[in-house]
Image (cartoon, rainbow, N blue to C red; front, side, top):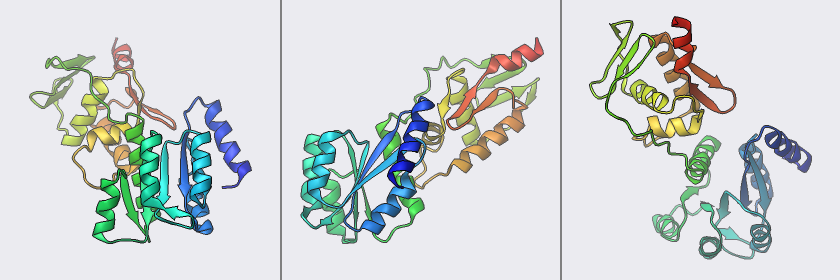
Length: 254
């Protein structure tokens, strides 16, 4: 991404009232660094590249970065040593990028404070997933449901008893999968609040050890809407996530 494109992305995000996450890519392979920058730049994320530790120090002192992608082998120093410097001076997550795939190197990196470790070559989809995981963690991604009283949740002609795992629409039982139940629960306990896609994914798929795509959330939301006949209650908030509005169904039934 060139400077003009980067500025356009930043301006668009600012106009939409979104917070930009800035990623610092420290990689001496210029073509790889530029490719990573293009792959990771989006409406809410921008990337800045440099090829040496001297420039990295200048950038870190001048700006706040949400995440650093750090190559271990650099022309003017060792990434492991610089990792310790970053962790001591700056509040930022670090993902190590390296061709060193020895177990001892991975352990050294993680024990040295790295938040993740990716060996070259790697798939861009995997890199994006791990980057998004770190950004969600930094931004307080884990959604905590509001304290539940344990009582059934009722509105319009719906009754949801999460403790007994029983769900009714117009007195008729509705069978929901485990993930659909978790999604419905976080919706009902945060009614009227827009919940970002990443946070919903982290909440619903808490036990998953694999990367979960946005499409999995989309499919689960669609099935939940269809089963409950509640398409008007679960609003898609474009570019952000979903918001549950029980009053819309109540108004229609009123």
